[in-house]
Length: 414
Image 1 (spheres, rainbow, N blue to C red):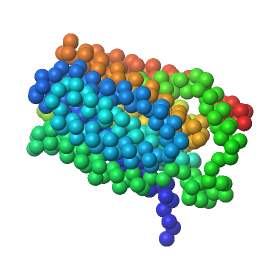
Image 2: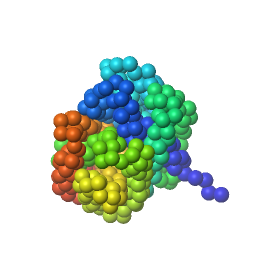
Image 3: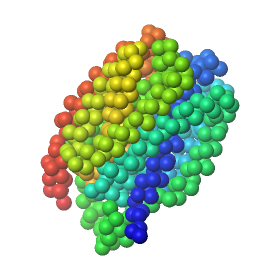
Image 4: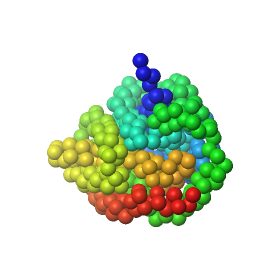
């Protein structure tokens, strides 16, 4: 029997980490907003700021994590991130004040920085080349599948209260995450393979001249407007996405939709994104990635527009299909595009910078949506504005140079 290439085990491990982490601190957080408002009387803006603080720290951390993962590898960062994240979630269960609430989220940010996208995507990028789109599509589907955790969180809160639910989820992070982190390996060359499972005749470490060229390339890459366009579009995507996933249940509550139905709809957002993650990952391996990514942004923008009119049942389905598939596809293609255009030796650094830009959007999105609702008692205009910003992201993506031109410039450096 043919042995399964170990890179796919790393994809599976990264899938499971993404599944649990995204479920408890990203998509599932919306289920805690109303219980927190009820117990403490905090405003939506105050609670939304917690998610923004998480994004702020991840924004500051992401570039640093990118450099660390390129230097020390994914395995060490995953292990430490899982431990810290578990502590942060458990601490949330003991919250007694707004300051303690924010402090717990800062701790969560440090933990999440070590065991989410920058680290897991770098691990996968190191083990794949021609199949990088498919591999990242499968890995990123863990974020989509995390929607299955949202109804579980809603049930835990109803059955045991929000505090106990937090403690259970934090303990689960340790029980699941520590063994999974041990599965991850850093680079295939260390085990006699090249990316995609081919036998490697290269030495385990790149030559000094290669490392010098890689460093020079990194400096040159940072000067290119194409990288700036990708980063800005990622910021706009995260601005809209974090606002939606944070406020979707409160928003549907204003539409007189039951909490259980709202929870199922919140779960449907990441679950349906699996189609986009796998589908666009596959298409990205066949066609020019920037064109495929532009289509994904168009779908997300149309879904964002439909969210303004969810009083009509048909619009709920339109929102779920277009928005979910769009942002799911982008989440795969952003890493695949970096890997294809700029190679893997600088992948962690470049992805970290991109995540830093995205985190800035994550700071602005939820807080802006909460602030608008506190003053207008409506989300309509903020959803409309975000749909326009996604349209701007389409223009930015189309402004990226073709991969052939980018590779020609980079190869000229060597």
